[in-house]
Every structure is written in structure tokens, then in C-alpha cells.
Image (cartoon, rainbow, N blue to C red):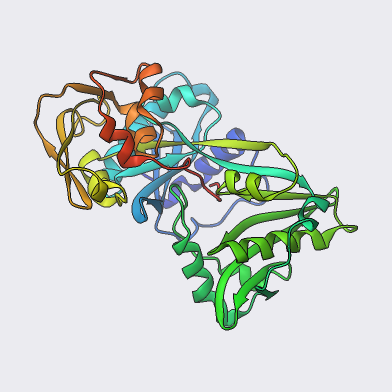
Length: 371
């Protein structure tokens, strides 16, 4: 079996695989879409597998880390169980490292395949369905609201980046400019937040993105959702901070989550690329001496020292390797999953290393997008 870049003459075979795997419909495309993504195929006499690596950036510690998003992984039914998908994933790991993508994220309904290559559940896309009337009880706010204005595009992007929590993708929202349901919040001439809204069937108003730079803006935008009372029954709200919402709403709610999986492709580069907001409050010196077990990305394997230096953290080869971490533990730890959880799952052993938790502590990594 050969794993290689997809060519123009692979289009028919890939379209067939996508139709079989995902039920894709519609006319066959006449050419590959224009993009900077990487496309890999597995060939053994014919094309038996396919995947895409999409180029993203993902926020961690307030900085954007280059990330390869795996998507559209498809294998011919007659070739399943023969190592096609595993071969594609192994090549994808090398490809992402060569392309300077120290992280990789994906969504999956077959976690065993990806866990076998080092991806692990690390964050969620989360939403809550809440009665519209619950938002009417919120107090008035002095923040002004209005429609999205094309001149506000840069300010919208700045709001998103200023409030980005761990896990969010770095991207812009040109599509908001044509959304008649979107709401812009501003204080005088300063944009302080926005809501991306969409009407769904069954009288649901979908707030796909809720961004606020301060409490007054958050209150104003959330209260505006109550204005849909009578027209809509339910607000479906995607969340980056469910705890905050629980503290301000007068009604209880439950959330629905879709997990995403993270893989550290290149550990030293991943450490160097992210921000470390808590590092400055910790003592300088060795935070942990790790021994990484990573058979599918051998460049990660072996002993490493994590060293705190002011507000930065760096990774150096060597050390005693007293704390053993499986490749599957690296993504969750990077995204803020506590080491007690990783130990309980058998993904980490060795003496306690409190600095590991202090360095990546957060309120849970979340995304507002799926791909």
C-alpha cells in the first residue's frame, strides 16, 4: 500500500469513497476545491482510502498554535480492517510535523481508531436549549445593540480574539456581514461583542456564537434573546463558559456536548507555541521530568524536561523521566484535563507533578466550530 498526495485523476475514486462513507450527494465536482489543505490517498492497485488535513490555528494560553484538522477520513468497505486508515494516520502525523503543525484535532464516532494513534478526547462543542422567556428576566444594560455593520468587521474579529478561550479556532467571520439576524453590541463607537443568530425549525433561535468583552455586554446580548418571545420557544446557545451562564440566568439548564479529540504531533514545538498565563506565578526551574511513550510519533518519545522560565515554558530533551505520559495523555493535558484524570485512566504514571496542572489549568477547552 502506498500513501501519497491526491492527484487530479483521483477525484472520481475519492468522490466514490465519500459517497459510500458519508452519504454525500449532489453532482460530482469537476475539480478539487481551491484550498491550502493537504489531501492524502491510500493506493494498492486502486484508491482505497482518503483523508484531508485542514490548516487551522487553535487558541491555547492566549496564543494561536498551528493545528492540522483531520477530516473526511474514508476507507473503501472492501479494504477495511487491512491497515488503510492506520497508514493514512501515520503519514498524516509526519506530514503535519513537516508542515509545522504541532497539534492535530478531529471529530469522530470511532474513537478506538484514533486513540490507537495518539488522539484523545480533550474538549467539547457545547450548547444548551433554554426557554426564550428565561432571558427576559435579565436586567437592562446600558450597552447599545444593533445590526452588524460592514465597517465593524475588524472590531468583531478583535472581540473574538480578545475573549478566545482554550480550544477555539482562530478564524474570521465574513459571513456575519450578510446575516440579518446577527446582533452587534457597542458602547458609543467601541464594539464590545456580538451574537450570531440563525432561525431553526420548531421555533428555535440558534445563537451559534455569543461573544462579550465585559459583563454589561454579556447581559445586553443575553437579554436581547428574550425579545424573540412569542415568535420562538427556545434559544439554542453555543457556550464557551457554561458556568457564567448558570450564574446569571434565573433558570436551570442542562447542556449537550460533542467531544473533539486532540493529538500533540510535535511536543517541543507545541510547548514553545502556546501561551502559559500561569507560568509567571510559579517558581522558575524544572516543572516536570517526563518520559513520553509515543510509538507512532517517535520524535516525541523519550525523556523531556519542562522548564519554567519567567512567563515562558520550554521543553528540553533529557532528564530522569520519572513521570511517564502516554501519547494519548499529551493532548488532554495540553487542553487542561487534570493529571488525576489521566492517572485514573492509566495514561500517566509516576510521582505527583503539581506544576503540570497549574500550567494548563482552565475552565475546559471548547470550540464553537466543527469541521
